[in-house]
Image 1 (cartoon, helix red, strand yellow):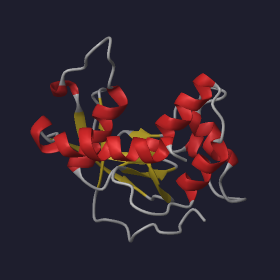
Image 2: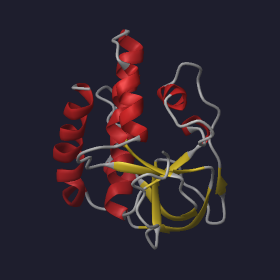
Image 3: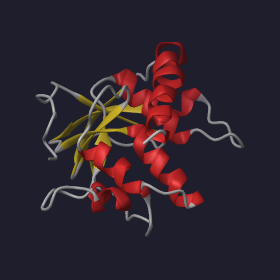
Length: 173
């Protein structure tokens, strides 16, 4: 199930963050919070498949890594300047490609007590249809070098149009 639909590995992977990271650093998952969306995804995976809560993420392009970092750092109360985003080329061995919007929808449902988490988890592990913003996940990754983040203009459609379409689709599951 985990490898279903995983395209051949792109030549390069990218990771976006607000935290400056040194080349050569090996990143592993941070300890999760009990009841987190990532832990909930672990319940829906194929037996024996690696855990989402024990994985790091990367994207297949600088634009997607920048967009995902912007999405994940977004706050209505404490705006994060685009210039704070760092993007790195990384080396990893991904085991799955999943929609980012499903994680945020799981978080929302866990906070509000809304139901049907199983359909979301199943869609994360067995994608169907079009998802615009996706993450490659792996047990760890090595940071190779920092690269210039994509500009706000270059990620506008990915960040505000495509991701919102993904969020609407996830909310409908």
